[in-house]
Image 1: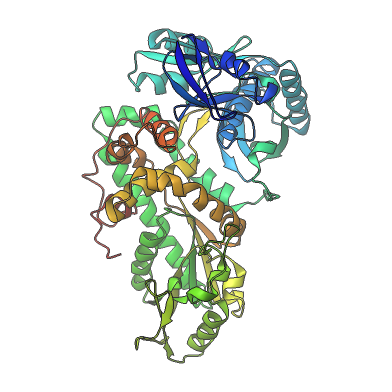
Image 2: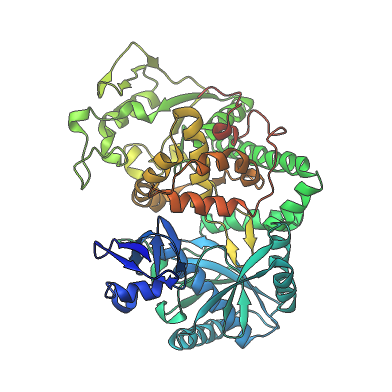
Length: 551
């Protein structure tokens, strides 16, 4: 017998060993009814056919659970893949990246251009597959067999990825007569998915779903979206280098030619920063640069490198730290839990900040404040700022693109930059890497090194950070004059060596354990790369250490 505790019912019972989670859900009275999709057993996500042989604390989950979103997304991709193969047997689906409200996809090897009629046909076919409630079946087979199976189904991108992973066995998913691979769990069957919608976009289409929309938002993807353009720019660059997927990068690492990729990627970023500096210089009316972006996007190092390039152009950057304009603690707004909300723009004294900006732009000298984070009070310590003939204000903070921050300043005087780590490389054609995972890994490594935070600390804060980004940063990203991609194609291979020991220290008893083990599994797709050739001015040095900039 084995003792099982169900968190949903707050009961503990003894059962025969070897029962599946599905059977245990029924034994506990089906607390989620027929809506159960998986369970978290001893803080690890498991599918319902998982058999239990040891004592477990189990929480059954449904589609409302935070872990369900990615399960739905992967399952929807498999449904789309099957629909395309059913309609156009020779075609190949490529899932490129996420956009607000959907996933951008393209189709190769079509005898005609993608049209609205085709988008409608995909909707009809995917609805048919969802309505049929077909099972997603996972089977673990020897990797050699998986390679031959993927070759038979023309999934050569997956062959490349799993061969360089060097695992004895590979988990393969089946949906009716189609086979695929995903690096996370799927739903029990297609019937759990909402219907999918398709909209022509770029050279492909958006797959729009209800689970890809953040609650309380109404995302709209403009035809000329700056975010989409920067993704396409980097995808095109990777195509030139023949580095679309992780397996391609792993081959270069195994061949000891990864140093060349570091040099090329760093040179590309420096060229892009220099181009932005040129644009600022040529926009003669621009008197201030506003830099924003989500957590761990590398804003600080980017701003320092931009300062250097602006000086090359003969400009004199005058740096303003927005954190010094926090309201006094007693005037700081609180969130729905009654805690101080430092993420909202209302935590800043926007009126005072604008007064000082107007004075600076009029050529006046100002007494710049310093915020004392220990006392929670604004102080004046004799620091002054004044604009000269070739001066330009540079400000970095999460609210840089929010028009409210600089409401009293004419837009023609502003140059706005949005910085984010938009991971361009994918595991394979159906497994893009979420940019949020890239940033979380950066933050885990940096917080451990600079603040002594464990992975548990960082992971547990992450959902709160993400909610703040959804509310305060992402809605304003298209306000930017330019979007800068701070992601480096090689960085996850380098971060692997630094992050893995930190993640392994997370105990099974922690609620962060599932996220930690998920990231550890994610790193199994990457061959490790040395940081030896990464220059001291690299954005990645902000997280790894060894930067020549002072933070």
